[in-house]
View 1 (cartoon, rainbow, N blue to C red):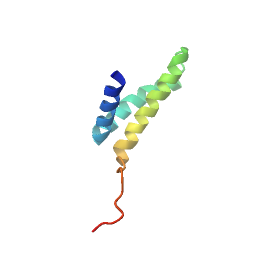
View 2: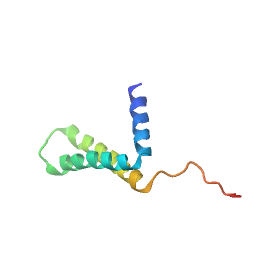
View 3: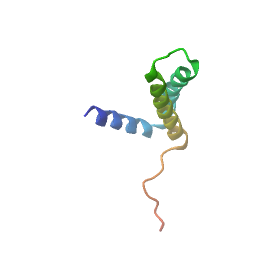
View 4: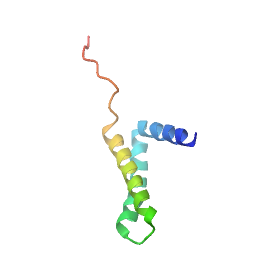
Length: 77
């Protein structure tokens, strides 16, 4: 149930393009700092920072370029 709600919130966030860019930068920035700083030796920090960076970059990409339509009508009349 928790994962469904989180997924729904993430999908609703991706539809709001300006907010998606801001949240994406807010997530990807600290994730990149965690990955590149090398201050933390915990094994799970690398994986967590990669997941957060990928999510942040995906939100930035969606916010800049928009989401693609589910289908394309070949016949426009």
